[in-house]
Length: 110
Image 1 (cartoon, rainbow, N blue to C red):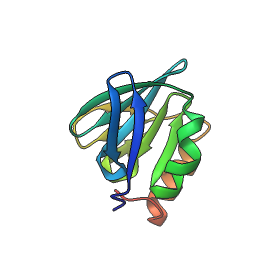
Image 2: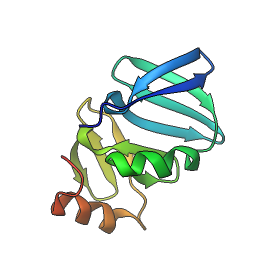
Image 3: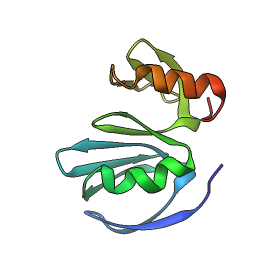
């Protein structure tokens, strides 16, 4: 588990967030919502700005609008992922086989 802490300049102010507390990131144009175990934070950036660093720490881009911390994935079904908190997120049809394969191989946690 990656407990590296990062400071983010969010709409709510400067916030320090540990990577292992981030459940997923959601993009709506250039507004990112960082969904954490302790609440949601908003930041104006591109999802790609987070992708490179977080994907090295067990996160996976499952859709053009979602970057998920795989330790919170409970189940994967055809074109959707269910998280531990019951939230269901869409999985891109193009990425589905890759994501399923990575989960089977154990390269990301379930």
